[in-house]
Amino acid sequence: MSRTAHQDLHSEQGARRGEHPGRSRNPVIKVADLAWLEFEKPDLDRAEVFARDFGFHVAARTERELWLRGTFAGPPCMVIRRGRTSRFIGPAFRAAERADLDRVARATGTDVRDADVPGGGRAVHLLDPSGFPVRVVHCAGQLPELPGQQPLLLNFGTDHRRVNATQRPPREPSRIQRLGHVVLETRVFARALDWYLDTLGMIVSDFLFLDGQRGRGPTMAFIRCDQGSLAVDHHTLAMHLGPANGYVHSAYQVTDLDSIAAGGEYLKERGYKRSWGIGRHIQGSQLFDYWRDPDHFMLEHFADGDLFSCDLEPGWAPMSTSGLAQWGPPATRDFLGASPSPQRVRDVVQALRGDNEMDPARLLGLLKAANS
Image (cartoon, rainbow, N blue to C red; front, side, top):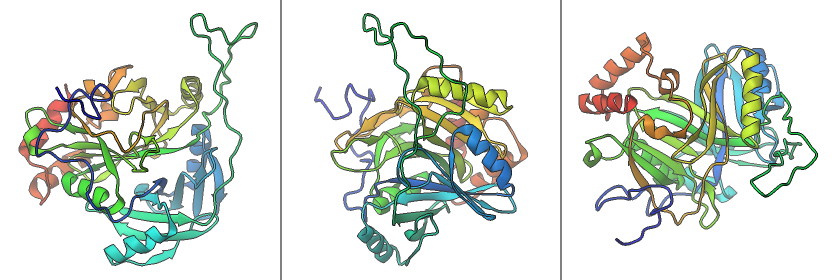
């Protein structure tokens, strides 16, 4: 068997002849990272209370906007603007260079505008095939680094680094270091995937496909930024086919497993709802813990994720619930979005009637994956 860049590393399967290569031959630009996520909520005070409990710091606050950040230097992680309803607006990606904004603006017929971000900057406003507003930004300055949680000193077998000292992680919020990734559901998965690869120069780390339907192409992709030989997060964006176009969850890096666990106890004591965790994923390998905020948005604490350079080819694996984690409790119905609701029923009906990639076979395949 010929060795490939994914073999023995992150997937037992690689691409077959003629399958999606997982990258564009000539992308317009190559974004450097996810900058921040944009939301609207009617109650900024309640949003700020949860944000501090989850582990964010407030970068800026006005009557209309709440900017949240982690301890690492860089742009904010999230902006929440006051709105009539709670909703996800879209992601902002960080351009590698200021000239990339001009390049993507010319290619898409848009303009470069001022970015309303603390410290200032410039942005190009785009719309992806799913209908999500996507911004490509170049910030004028970076927020300075803040004091962070230090990883605990651990003893391993005969490697004794902690002697005459106890281990007592404080019961306090996990201190968010940075934004890691966002996961989106889309009815037009193939079109959306190609848009992010062709326009923003992102590349696929792993594809998932439905059992018995691999020939129809993948139905989920874990997508990273392409920074050449510099290793980056296994995924900055993940997308999967589904009956709606919407936000699934976003993930924020913390120091280590104790930070995840102690921060989770802190959230539990304050009455917040854990969606799923604690466990370790397969694709990406992250230690994870998922929570719901008061507006029912799902957010993840994670640590110890995989880092890939541009050399690794996409892995291919079947989509299944059992394939979500190496260890941990079974995935919950809340995490899977499997609890029936009137809105979910409407989404399914509209998807099956609309001009998109959902059809009865795909729907049955997704239902089977959720129960496998």
